[in-house]
Structure formats: structure tokens, C-alpha cells
Image (cartoon, rainbow, N blue to C red; front, top):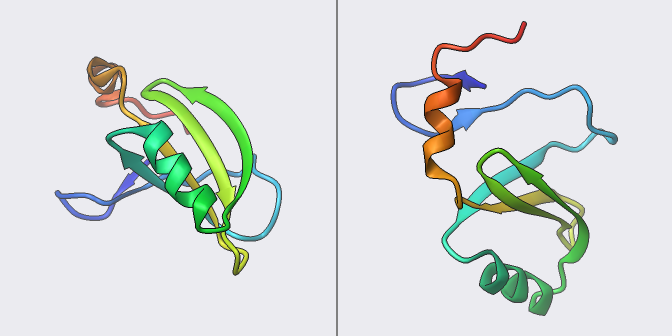
Length: 87
């Protein structure tokens, strides 16, 4: 995770994902409701997974952009990552 400023957004650089397009990740208050909205707008659902912060669902937008949504269900997790460097 890279913090370009003292305020969001943060940038997470990951080399383990397939494909050339970036994945834009957004936190939503209600994952199921947000998934329903994207499905109704023609977004193609991809995979579901869990990250330390909570559940994630990925999508391909009609124009090809990849996005992912997650719901913060474990807000205390962030304190475990403070000051951590994995490189």
C-alpha cells in the first residue's frame, strides 16, 4: 500500500493479478446492495474472496474496466498493518 498523501486514496500495488488492466477497489457500506446495482447495470460478476477487511466481489464493467467492491466488516484489522513493510 502506498500513501501518496496524508488522506485517501491509498494505492495498493500487486503483481499477482492476471491481465493488464488495473483493478479499481472501492469500499461500500452494503456489499449485497452494491452488487445488485452493478448487476442491474450490466457489470459481469467475477470472483468472490475475503481480504482481512471483509468480503470482496470483483466485476468487469461493460467497457472492460475491472473493479472490486468490499465491505468493511472487520474495522479493527487496520491497526495490525500499521508500520508493516512487506518488501
